Length: 138
Image (tube, rainbow, N blue to C red; front, side):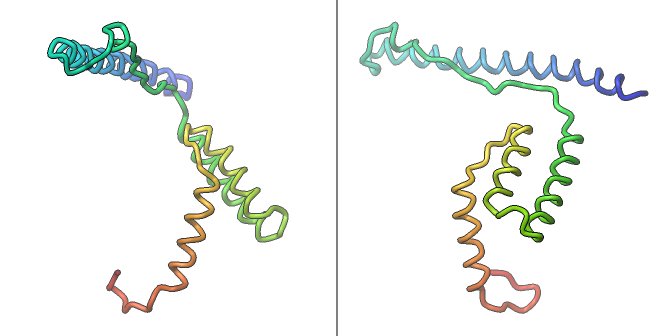
């Protein structure tokens, strides 16, 4: 098996998952429609029928990605950023932004400000941590 064959073998899986996702969306919409109908019938929902059914079920977009390639790139970029920080070529905030851009290719959105606060809080917690004998945890 060559690489082209391996990539193409992912297509049937993608189609199957896409079909299951559409079916799940249909099931969810059916349940919501029934609940809205019962709410309107029993007058639990006090709104016009048109407005009650004005909703949309949004499902994430499926995509075929070579996660192995991205994992390799993320590892290399992380190592490069660590070296760049050690040599004072980039500051911590810039390194985080670069890492955020790279990780976004996997569909992960990072909250850089929130991450900075959490890292600072974790550092303070580590500094204030009492010595615990090995094998004991908080």
